Image (cartoon, rainbow, N blue to C red; front, side):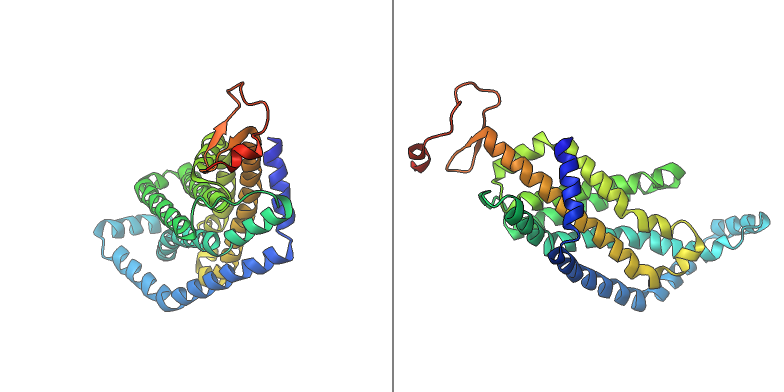
Length: 294
């Protein structure tokens, strides 16, 4: 718990570092331009398509008449933008996470390593391309989970629980992998994932819940839904802040865990790590001659 809180406060302080603030501008500008451009060209057509689909359904017409009899007929005008937002928000969140992980996280990890762990050896257990494939595969699994869980979102409490859970799991998968990609070997990364899985997942769930906040704002009322497009850059800015903090938090925690793992074990030339927590024969560090052997 102490390492978790220590990495949390360090991540908050590092968010104010000038280099981190400059690095966050790249994904912010990229995502803002992309989303505003897509909203400008496709928002009206998407609304028209959804309205046409809603008006062409006989049973929905019956539902609208029933709503009007209850005095909530205005819900019909809000339903179309809410449905578009309902579909667009998870896509924006996952795309922002991938952009931050690809463009910002490697530089953030290097910053943390150079300032806090300068002696930590880089074993390059995963390349940038491998990290990209891992991120895309994780996004595909998260998107599948979102689609499968859609019927459950109709239950009022679950719509506040399921999206943060899925986004938290995705954040944990992507950020933890990228934090260890350059410094840890494959075996070290697997060992850290095994030992710290619950803690890393809890970190992902917390940041995933924070990342879900703008989406919950859009779904909270008609006024926010109407101003979805002009307020979209603000939402993306919040996503970038959350995922920037997430990158720093995972970098501090994972690199600290990696250093502790190497302190506890003897590193072999091939990059494997022997855990000596369960053995009694290694009481001293290996000699220089043994490490220099092929």
